[in-house]
Image 1 (cartoon, one colour):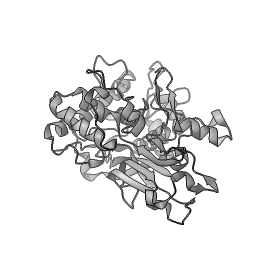
Image 2 (cartoon, one colour):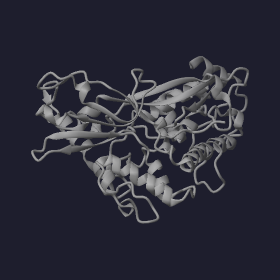
Image 3 (cartoon, helix red, strand yellow):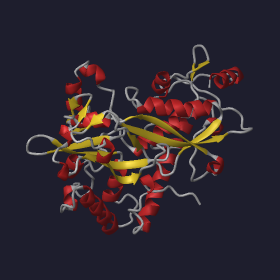
Image 4 (cartoon, one colour):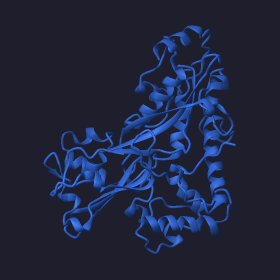
Length: 397
């Protein structure tokens, strides 16, 4: 029987089998919510949007592996991008120092009235400095906030004695084993992703769009074939796709790239799902060009704390790491150089990190090709005979 594993396949839930089962139930909910939906949902699920255009489940190429056995013959594939955001480049032009300072500091998020880490490529970082202002440590996380909120609020009624015990274990280990009270993490009912410990130690991602829910939503919506209703031509460009289907953020590297990769597989009549365990992972660190005072390779300063490192970046599942220099070296991260420039910002190291999402791809075989629909904000129209559209979509993939 298929089970959704804990993010990065960690063992943290092994002593809490009820929590492990509840995590499976949560990921299953995300899949069903985005594929099928519920009547009270404000936004349409993938299936509901297809049905608005007179299509059906047979036109969807994304599936829930907990309810479908297509994974048996699936081929893994990964989509990669850089951890350093590019969304804000135009705001600062050639002034990289101002850009890096902006990215390193918490900013007010639009519509939230709350400062948060603004890093938006599913990898966030925070910085530790000494009394001289030099960087001693940069903490990186790609761990989803849902896990921590799920534990604090006990979404599946496992029992807060268990979920809070695990939550405090995790926080204490992330925050140098300091004493942390459950009251530090929320108001008793709702979890607070912007609590002081997460702000300081980068326990998990907190930028509002850096979530597992967003990942599942992008995968589901991008698996639908889209066409220009004016000329009946398939939409295949990554930016046009994301604007048409309204998934993710077009200014990111990640969201358009993920959506395009999945849509390409759907146009080939392949079925797609997210790899298990579902997550967004740091896949590799490139130490090239980082120079230390004593010649120590910069790779020795990269430490994976949680998740799985691998020489094959397609298999790596890193969700927590730090870049730091041992105290006995007598120098700090700020004494390292990249291109003869001292490392003054965490963003300089983020530029060396790759992020990935993994998918599983299964051939459709003799299943009829999916039918395309128009864009999300358009009023549905009768698309008529779509045989020609399918042929064009096949040839363009």
